[in-house]
Image 1: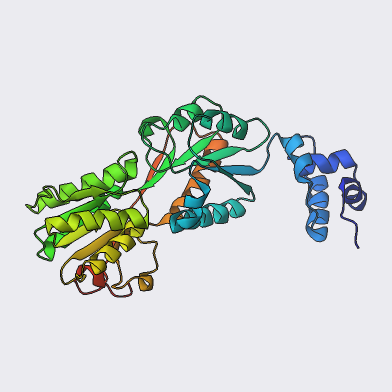
Image 2: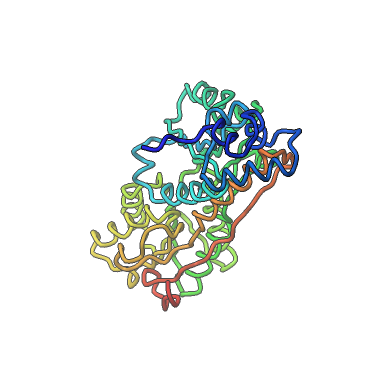
Amino acid sequence: MTRPLNLEEVGRRAGVSRSTVSRVVNGGPNVSSETKRRVEAVIAETGYRPHAAARSLASNSTGVIGLVIPSAVATLFDDPYFGRLILGISSATNEVDMTLALFLFGAGPDESSIISRVVAPGLVDGVIVTATTRGDPLIDHMQGTSMPFVVVGRPDNAGSTFCVDVDNRAGARTAALHLAGLGRRRPALIAAPSNTTAGVDRRSGFLEGLAEAGLSIEDRIAEGDWSQESGRDAMARLLAERPDAVFVASDRMAVGALRAIREAGLHCPGDISVVSFDGIVPPDLTAPRLTSVVQPVTEVGERAVRLLTAVIAGASTPEHVVFPTELAVRESCGATPTAGA
């Protein structure tokens, strides 16, 4: 087995000392351009990579980004949203030559103590926080530290926070106007949890769109918890109000809603049109295929990493990045499907 190169061997091949190699690797001072060229040539030729721990000590940087998800682990791995988000974050982390560390925990009274360990010096260079709730003390706790961080989603106090989100309100408004344009006059809403800003924004946007179309929701509203079962239960309750359309604030809840419609002996879209939000459930897994407001989850994760690296580098003016959504029309709403949807 070939022994990995160390600083001494790189220095010997470049004709310089170990300390000079260290200065080149870590961007230190007092190195001539010619010396730097020789050392870098040896590194390129041999594929030498400095030991991560040693590099961290020398540069005061860990090269690690922490992803904090204050959610039950079971919920995390049941939800394709988080899979796509982590894919985007890990892809961008690799592009900037950093490592991703995932921190999972359930929200509770020990949340602050757990975060204190996450932001301890020498563990990570910065943190991405997601799955927060309205008034989440986690954000306040992070703001009380010197740790660079970015929030995925819109926190209540977004004015003082770097964050990346999608335009939940506009997407839900589009869904309402689409259903109204199909001639539906008794719309219902299966809302996302009201303790989340995404839930609030999607509810507000849908009601805003209905008002523009001269429609009201009356009592045809129920709230779910993002899960399929909650969508099924909510739809079963709403059927007593005889809706002819329903906007479901997440794909997972919409899968449950479709099940409730079938169990009641009704047909989608003939009896009830269904439009959901997220665009994360593969269309062919539902019958009929879901019309959905698509959010670019992977791109959100990638942008969060780029924003965090800017904060780590010293950016101090809070930036709020908002991605647009797009309505993918499929069979569940009763309209002609969008080409390629």
